[in-house]
Image (tube, rainbow, N blue to C red; front, side):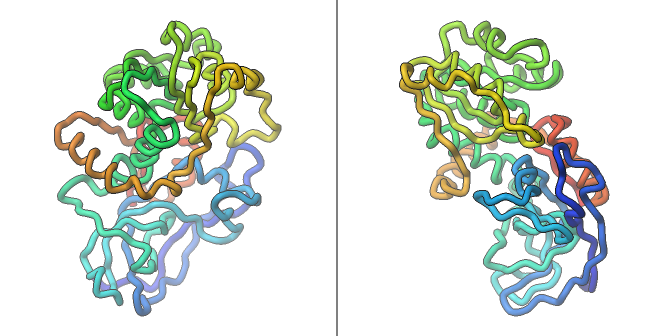
Length: 335
């Protein structure tokens, strides 16, 4: 395949004020240089949209640099090497890399990882076998210090990370796993995945629903949502309970500071641990995670869902819909 000399990419047209809109994105044509030494050109076949990307659209200092206006966005992608100046990444190799939001990418070979599409579908390396999978495993095991016999509550439980947290907890000896989600269909799916109880947070305040699902309290809360969910979990946590603060999607589009949690003082008497978590700080658990996940998948013990959108043109709307909860499992875009 002769590499093209140009490609299409999505750039940040303007910074969102609250909820992103299609006008915050722009699709444009860009030159595609030939690879220099140690570089490859990748024809992207799958790209990821993830909640953390919303924070990068704000011009604020954070754990990862913000996206720049009029510059292409980036994120996880899987594709085929179509031109190479790096012997370790020959033409035809399938690779995982960080230059998504474009149809072709010029990538440093050192920043790309070869994946085997014969072992799992290519898109799985953006989900169950990729960053979301490691996030679920490391967040539960390292940040929340999971122990067999724990009762575990997961918010955003039908998403790419939350659905895996619940299944990993059950396979690792949890006494009970409870999930919250945003629709009756998602609640039904959680029960199919082996959650012991699940509820729709639209049905009423979170705390009464959580107490009904876990009358003896919870030991671990895996937080993907923040806000009211975190406040409810603090009330329901048992003494020496542990929280993995992984995400706060309920606040990502907020234009005013959130009020909750208003009961943080309970953490003192209950001797709770609230641990902030970034998957980038737990890459050492990668080999352990991949070995265990490969075994669970081979045995059919872990199931994973995808919501697939088609084409780069639909990538901005896929991201907007992700923030609104339109996905079950991992949201990916097929290019």
